[in-house]
Length: 171
Ligand code: GTP
Ligand code: MG
Image (cartoon, rainbow, N blue to C red; front, side, top):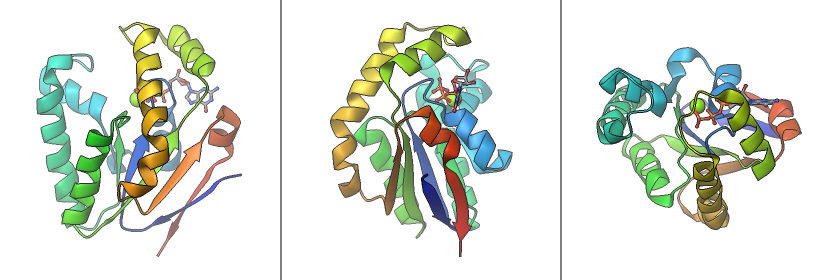
């Protein structure tokens, strides 16, 4: 079982392809105002979670709010795919700018699980091939993640791992 002891003052990146279970994990382990989700910010700035050309505005807003929370010393969870190193670098830089520890929880589930969940959801208006590309990008770059500046990287590889994970806060 994976124990995830989080520092009280951390920026937590949930990393994983669409349908890997980031938002579900976030809702199980964190309070609603601790979690900043890119989907939610896309909806706030454009009226829909799926407006892809609202990405820049959504992330600007998400980062603005994250910075305000970190200034107050509040643990903050970023629920976005973050499968690309450039996306994660921005998170590490934000944490460093606020003297907060950046940590990552990676949900790297088997492709078949992601595709089955995607088909079952029906609320994601894109082809499962998109998820395949996200997973490929994550796996291509996962081994180097330890050198991206995260203090800890916890990787969960099966739904059993994810369900059994225990998140605690350490002073
Ligand atoms: P995006 O927001 O599209 O990036 O996906 P996500 O990573 O936030 O995934 P989400 O938490 O929305 O989960 C996707 C689907 O998988 C949902 O239908 C969930 O109910 C299901 N799911 C998530 N986590 C688990 C899990 O641990 N076990 C099982 N059986 N289903 C899960
Ligand atoms: Mg989600």
